[in-house]
Image 1 (cartoon, rainbow, N blue to C red):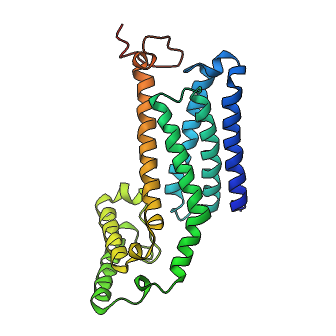
Image 2 (cartoon, rainbow, N blue to C red):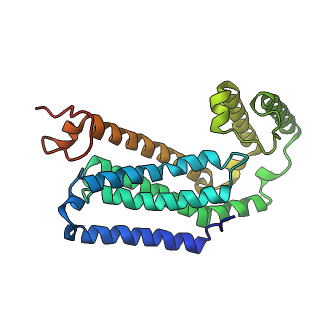
Image 3 (cartoon, rainbow, N blue to C red):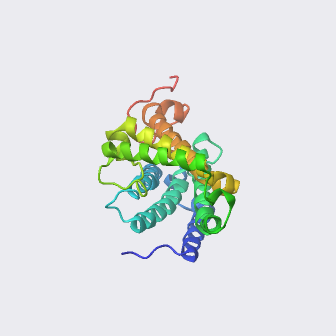
Length: 259
């Protein structure tokens, strides 16, 4: 089994990636013209490779919950792919950071910053919270206990359709369940949310602990939507993207050129 990323190693890899990006921006003008011309073959290929690498974390988010997956291997893969993908996307930008697609770089930076914070600081905060005797983690009153029993019974009933061999205490809804039994999977997720509310986890955690993951997910969705929009525009609306200039990248149509 591959070794997990230690905090120091994660920081070193991140700083090395940032240094490589900074060095490229400093030296890019000394490189052949193709390396600082938007849409040129090398920059286009760097963008394709970077985009594919940056989709690995999405696979990690699904695969880590699969019974046959190795979470440590997938975590390592998602870190390596994210850092290398960010470097390639920086190259793909050609140094033109005042255009709309450059916002994708900001999304990548924000995602990386949140992920590193969660690993270095967030995990410690969560461990301290769960180890505390906060009121939200003490025994609930009779009414809450009865409602929790009802929720657990309802979750177990849904499990007979979602995954008959799974245990309610360790089961998590995955993409496989959502695709195969969408109605049951969504109902199970709603029950989980109500259970979390009754237990009071969010009320005892700090805002940073409670909302970093939803924010991380929201940024990932924004990034994916932005990436899809960029791919569609450069592939089908190459004339609009080129704004009357030469189109040096592979495309299907040049709609929007106005000529």
